[in-house]
Length: 415
Image 1 (cartoon, helix red, strand yellow):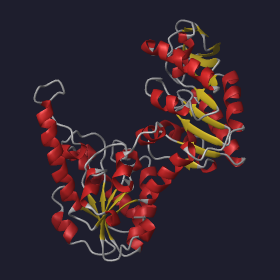
Image 2 (cartoon, rainbow, N blue to C red):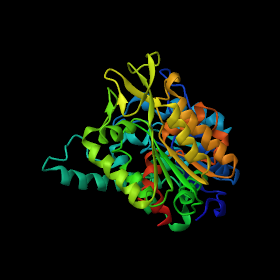
Image 3 (cartoon, rainbow, N blue to C red):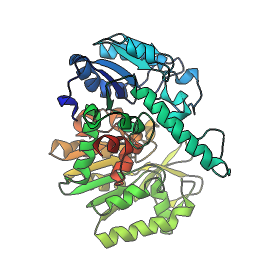
Image 4 (cartoon, rainbow, N blue to C red):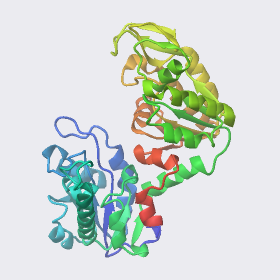
């Protein structure tokens, strides 16, 4: 069922959103992107005459109640964003009365789902090595189904609009869908856009296709790198992983971050790219600091000849030119992960060069997808968010989708 086709009048809809927003020490929201992303779906249900039950997680309370992870802190902000007073249920598993009393046009937000271990479905207080773990796991799965059944009992239909958790088979993201017929479960507008964005990258490729993979570790990106190797024309690998590749090829990297146990993997990726005819672009020079700090002393070094006591913290000027060249002529672009320690203003030039090249290519008709928390933070920091095609709200979910994995949150609805 499509959200636009469903008749919400007189119905109660329970909607899984991702309101895991960052808060400051006083409980104030520092970035409301995720709330704004869900508004079209939530407003549509209300405008169509439905009643709205919102559920989300926040943080990692590991199945225990913790005030710092309470969704009550964001209730007023959600009320303001929606333009409707949001009621609050302080216990997500005991909200039957609040849900039953809900009238058309009204909104109820449930307390943090992860205050219950049943949400994630993992046994608590027992290690995998324990002989009793499998029995505990089986018991938890049964409890998870009951928890999901309780959540489902509050509403007539279920909407999943939380792409950020779509890669998790949690009670509220996948198991709950079993308690609704195909006609009464659907993806929200945000989820539909995310699924379409991934499809554009993987199945509707316009060439040349350039993917930019940044970040500190090769190991966390290996699945996506290998899946993209059969699809891309240009593959830029930047950020901290630059130095694993440099060392693997015999370079000196000073104090730069490096995965010493992944040197053979780095060499394998280089060989794969050659075999598949992929233009692999690695940074040739780096902006180095004598310590990990914004006010560190700086020098430009070849990425394979960094002196002891110095570490690579950003892509150097030659690398930026090479990155821009591989990006600006592309017609399909994927960016995940920064080129340096962009949190430090003195080490943003590499990430900024990538962002500006993507914006320029998009202006010239390219389709650009920005995904992963740090890349999104980058594009927003540089004020270029409105000059790219799509900014994904999902980190792990986006990566798993691009790796070619099935997302439980999507499969539970689309099959």
